[in-house]
Amino acid sequence: MGIKPAAKGAKAAPTTVTQKHLAADIAAAHELSKKQGEAIMSDVIALLVKNLKKGARIRLAYLANFTSPNERAICLAESDDGLSFRSLGLAVDLRAAGTITDPSVVQLPNGSWLMALSAGQTTRLARSTDGLSFTLGETLTYGGVPELALTGDGGVRLYVCAGAIVAYRSQDAVTWQREQPVVTRGPNGSMLVCDPSRVAGTDVFVFKTGM
Image: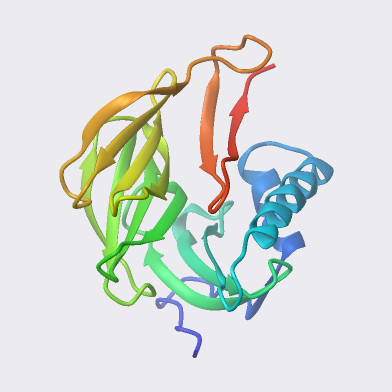
């Protein structure tokens, strides 16, 4: 699969994106140390690889050029082993889209792709037919920092941060129904809970909490 060129004026993603690249991005985006970023990435990758079906690949959507607002973009990378990722190129050019971060992407049962992105305290959706080039669409006002996950009956679930981590569900990825809060407090009692992540193929749910 060829690498899709970056938009004019935007920096292209590296051809090979390593686990260290991703860990550095996580650390920068969430004000963590390099060691903390690497530990988080290592744990998530280990879970993904453990549950990866034979012949399947890991698709990763990430925010590129975090420290350069005028060059930000959502890029895609893919891996067979969870250790070395091949760049698939630019997915969404964010230069004229305002502050958008935290992408989450799934392939829907009909073969199309859905991406959810954080736009402050709201969620922006983007869609694609080929899983490579996405078009920004509607804004959902349920909360921000979204996570997408497929349900067992062909639907899709959206987790957002809105005072707690709250779940919404849709059968068609267009109309959403509020379910319930999934996490209201952290293990230490903190009411600051956000950044939900459901590890595909497992019952593991990861989130960030205050101290």
